[in-house]
Each structure stands twice: as C-alpha cells, then as structure tokens.
Image 1 (cartoon, rainbow, N blue to C red):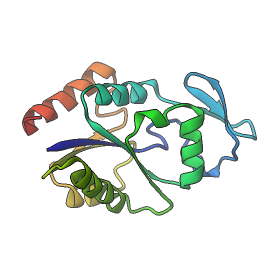
Image 2 (image 1 turned 45 degrees about the vertical axis):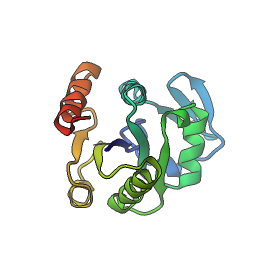
Image 3 (image 1 turned 120 degrees about the vertical axis):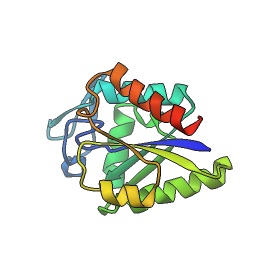
Length: 167
C-alpha cells in the first residue's frame, strides 16, 4: 500500500492563480517569494511547504497536480527550491487532473510495488473533485487552507486518514 499526496500549485502551493501567465526567468527574492521577469511577485504558502516536508518525513509519496504549462511551473518550483519536495510531477496543459493523478498512481503502483494507493488531494478549488473521487477511491480531499487552517489541524486530518488505511 502506498499513500500519495497530490498538491495543486496555483492558489494552493503559491498565491498566484495562473503561473503559466508569468514570464521566466524567475528570481528568488526570499525563502517563500519569487518574481518573474516583469517583477510580478509570487508568495509560497508556508503551510503548504510544511505539509510537504511532513509528508516526506512520513514516507508519503508526493506529486504536483496542476493544469499549467509544465516548463513554466517546473522552472518556478526550481527557482524557489521546492522541486525537491516532490517525487513526481503531474503538470500538464489540460484540465483533466483525474487523468494526470491516475497516471501517477499507476506509475507509483508499478515502481513501488503497491497493490493499492491511498490518495490525499490538496487543492484550493473543488472543480476537479468529483472526477478525482471517481478515478481514485479512498480519496482524502483537503480544501487548501479552508478544511484545515494551521499545521496541527492539517496533520491531524492526514494522520486520521493514515490510521484508517493502516499505514
């Protein structure tokens, strides 16, 4: 059994709602901030970073899950040095997040020898939720930073989910 945490980027990992509209190159200006070549500033949510770090410590597999231009999104992740927090990247320029997530889930099953995957899905919008539930049973959905508003509450949700899976 494997647990995969899928994290959306726009509005979830960072405060910008369409990173694909920005113009690289990007420049890191602080630990959680970067700008594009037009000086558009993007702030990374510290809570998102802490949840990803916690997930890695718990041996949870992590993946981006984003409808974006992959080159631009990946460059942003590398600039702010967050690419290290993800095992996989599901960033494609189409809106079918369930298809992307299923592709990663099947890859994880094959490469990690898992018979089942237990997905955790963090996104700021519920737009893709029904498709995600249909594609990936046992899904834990966390609406970014509404379902839980602080680190301890988010971790408690994830820990309760892990207990229910016998992880």
